[in-house]
Each structure stands twice: as structure tokens, then as C-alpha cells.
Image (cartoon, rainbow, N blue to C red; front, side, top):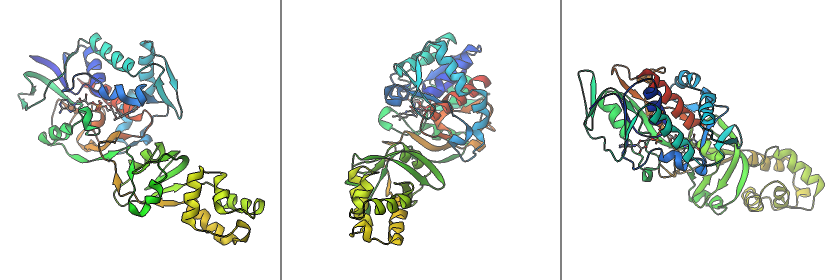
Length: 384
Ligand code: FDA
């Protein structure tokens, strides 16, 4: 069977590309090995899908080429996607920090994309194995179908139990495209024996400024049985490389706060002063770590200042991350140097495109990764 485009992957990027191309008159086939489309959309945002972010901008994405995402993001913006959501009568709300969610269910986003595909006459084949890909005479051949365009939209390997695979990288390499070493991102950290005192705080959440390699995020952190999680931690994990410390500002303005406590409550111990600002279990652990035994009134200011430095720059040393099993996304991927930022087309392989998470563009937590799926999908869909 002859099509204009075969799209590999019925996730957010693949479905939006298919609908865009189909509605422009192209004959489009989507292949996916899953038994239903958009599985990651269905589980996203706690079942409500954080489908975009009002603040989406190129600076909110990591890539070997930080400018690569600019073109696609500017030609299909968060407002374009929101417009689509509203045209389908899907009620939405801003939760926090520009993050837009469905009022109802993530299922509405999948149904919307499928309806858009139906409007474009797109054929979707589920339970389909990709198998060998043939290429010759300007055509790609997959699973008994042929087309002038082949779109790699199979995402990255994060959450393999949902059917995620690294097939995008195999296909890219088969056509001579580079792959930036993939790694789990938006992922919790593990802490080792040397920092086991913090694992004992499992369940304690607290506001923090977390920093890794110059990236800084102010949001909640959460201690877990194995280490550290929470939005601020997931955000910095995308910037983390093995061996890097993660620096936490556990108590901002700690020096002034401790000196004030010393004046106000000279008979109290450090733990009591910290408990005014931190969850009590964390206050206890930090006081034990700092190790000031005296009442605050007897502690020299210089010693208090050293304690404050520990509270403002607590350096933790993850032994690793929770890996792809727990990573919300995969950083790295098909090298943007091999792709056109306008069409997502592969340089040197006419008709081949790569979009979405398969590409070396990774968004922050908060709707940015779906926006990249929509924007890059739209760019490829327009080029078919
Ligand atoms: P995606 O992974 O969605 O789709 C790829 C498709 O290819 C899948 O349908 C898969 O079955 C198919 N496929 C893979 N290998 C194949 C093979 N070998 N053969 C055939 N088909 C194959 N982002 C965000 O912006 N807001 C949010 O709220 C969330 N929440 C969230 C929660 C959780 C738990 C996860 C794991 C992830 C998120 N994300 C998110 C990230 C977001 O889900 C992700 O970035 C996009 O789904 C990527 O879209 P793609 O279409 O590129 O890949």
C-alpha cells in the first residue's frame, strides 16, 4: 500500500504530525506496537495531562544545540495547542507555574488527537511491529507499506513497562544519523550509605532551591526510602551527570534567621530554632548533622554562620538515579545537528524526519515535553 507518510509511534508527537499532514491532504499511516494510542498521555499529569506550559520558551529545553527548538516552538506555540484544546471544548485550568491541565481527564487529549487524525483520514495500525525498514527509489518500506516520508516518533526508553523502547536510535543509526548518548531525566536520585541519614527522612517534603551545574529550581523536594525526589529534584536531575553534587538551600536567609533566634531564644538549642522553619524531622536531622550541642545564646556568631552555610548550601552526593524505570523523560537522543529545525527532516536522507522525545530536546517538568511533542510534530506534519 502506498502512502505519503508512514509515522512510527502513536504518541503525542506522532498523532499531531499525522493529523497535521492528513488534514493538508496527505495519505498517512501511523504504526505503533502498543494496543492503544497515546499511552503516556493517558498517565500524564496524574491522569489529567499537563498538556502545555504558558511559559514555554526555548530556554526551558536542554539540547546539544540550545537554539534548535526555537523554530518549531515559535511556529506552533502553547497558544496554538490551547486553541485546539478549546475548539474541542476541553475544560482546563492552570495549576501552578504556568502548567495547564485538563479539568477532566487526559483521555480527552487522546480523543482530541484521534478526532483530528480522523478529520485528516489518517490510518492508525496498533499492535504493529516495525520490523525491517527498506529504503530505495525515494521510498521507505515498513510493515508492507511504502511512503516518501518516514517519521520517527517512537519516543525514548523511559518507562519500558509502558512499551517504551530505544528503537528510534536504532533507526536513526541505520540511516547514518548521530545519537547523543541517552540518559534518564526528570528522575529521582539515589543516596548512598554515606548519606543514609537523609533516607531515614522518607516522606518529608520541604520547599528548597536545588542546584546542579548552574541550573537552579525553587520548588518542593521530597526524601524517599532510596534518596531524593520532588519537582525541584526532578528538574535538576536533567542537568546532573555522574559524580556531580546536588546543592540544596534548605533554609534561605539562614544566617539572619539563626542570629535572630539566638537573640530571641538564647536557652533553646539549634533543633528548636530550625523547627520554626523546617519540618521537625528535617530540623532534627540538620541539627544532628551540624552538631552544635550548646544553647544558642552560648554559640559564637561565627559558629552560627558556619551552620548557616550548611543550611544554605547542603551538598548531597547521589550515587545514581532511579533510571529509566522511573524517569519521566529521556534526555539526549537523535542529534539535532543531523536535522532541520524547520522540518525536522534528516540532513542527507530526504523524506526521513524525527520528532518528539526521540530527538535530543528535553523540556523541564511542567508541560514542556508535551509542547515539544506538539511543536515538533506540527513542524514535520507541515513538511509532508
Ligand atoms: P511517546 O513515548 O509518547 O510515544 C511513542 C510511541 O511509540 C508510543 O506510543 C510507543 O508505544 C511507540 N513505540 C515505541 N517503541 C516502539 C516500537 N519498537 N515499535 C512500535 N512502536 C513503538 N510531559 C508533559 O509535558 N506533561 C506531563 O504531564 C507529563 N507527564 C508524564 C508522566 C509520566 C509518568 C511520564 C512517563 C511522562 C510524562 N511526560 C509529561 C513526558 C511525556 O509523556 C513525553 O515527553 C511525551 O509523551 C513524548 O511524546 P512522543 O510522542 O515523543 O513519545
